[in-house]
Structures are given as structure tokens and as C-alpha cells.
Length: 127
Image 1 (cartoon, rainbow, N blue to C red):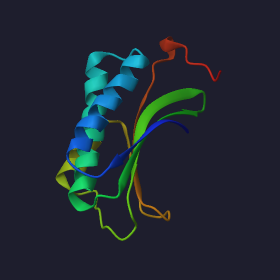
Image 2: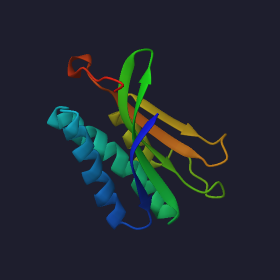
Image 3: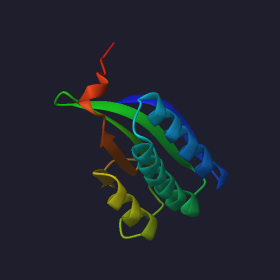
Image 4: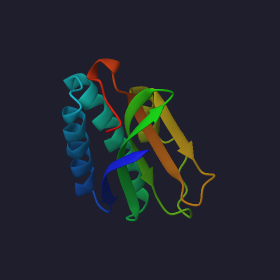
């Protein structure tokens, strides 16, 4: 995973920042406007759930490569003592928007990772 940017999630204004930053990164990769909006909305919904529970969350926007396929996504982390369940409305909505949604409670800091594949026609390289 290659982190592109990191945003602290402290209050409701950070939801707007996260959405706009995700749209900007998706635009940089020349993704369709519908894809930009879908991914940014999913990120914003996850951020909203975390901000409602704590002011100590973080969003990392990243690219990753798995089996020769590139992905663009976001990972939200928060303190381990804050309970978050995948049945919450905002998380269920985000799950419907993106093909890759993972809630991980097993690590020291729990996280939610969402991602979409970057079309091969964009010719992303490791350099």
C-alpha cells in the first residue's frame, strides 16, 4: 500500500475535506466522474460513522497493487476502545457502493479499508 495523503478526522468539516480530497485523487487517476463520486461518497460515509464516535480517527488515501492489478482506496483507523460494528447504517451504505470493504478489529488499531480497481487502460506503473 502506498499512502497518498492522510487526514485527521476530528469534526464534521473533516468529512467535507475527506470527500473533496478523494475526488481530487480519483480525478488525478482519470477515473470517471461516477466512479469518483461513488468512491468519495463511500469514504465520506465511513468517516461520518467514525467522527460520530470519536475525534481521534484518521483517513489514509492510498494506492495498492495486488496480483498485477492496481486499486485506489481509503483506510480509516480509530482507537481500539471505540466500538464500531459493520451493521451501522453508514457502513452498510458504503459496503453497497464499493466492491472491496473490510472491517478489521484484529489489529492494534481497528480499521475499515475500502477500495476500487483502477482500470488497466490507465497504464499505472510502479515508477
